[in-house]
Length: 88
Image 1 (cartoon, one colour):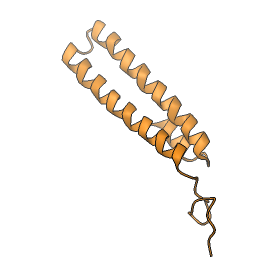
Image 2: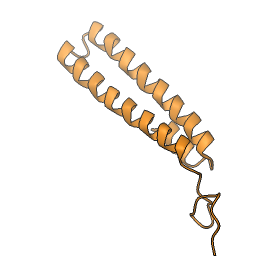
Image 3: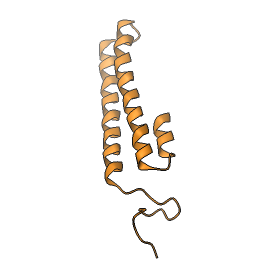
Image 4: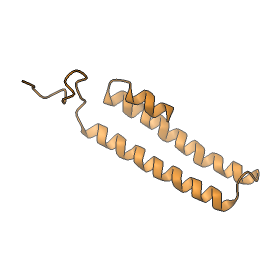
């Protein structure tokens, strides 16, 4: 979540996408660590599977956000309008 917050406040879609990709990687790390949790008996297989399913949903949301940002012009922070639009 911290990477997403930092990217959101970065001031550009390109930087936001970078931080979203970092968050996507962190999500994959959590999914991997859940196998270790199961091996160490911190959770059982059902809990691991449930939590991994949630991380996959989060990952899907991050991918959709990246896709959206890559196809949406950035907003001008002053006018809150797309940077390439002309305002009156």
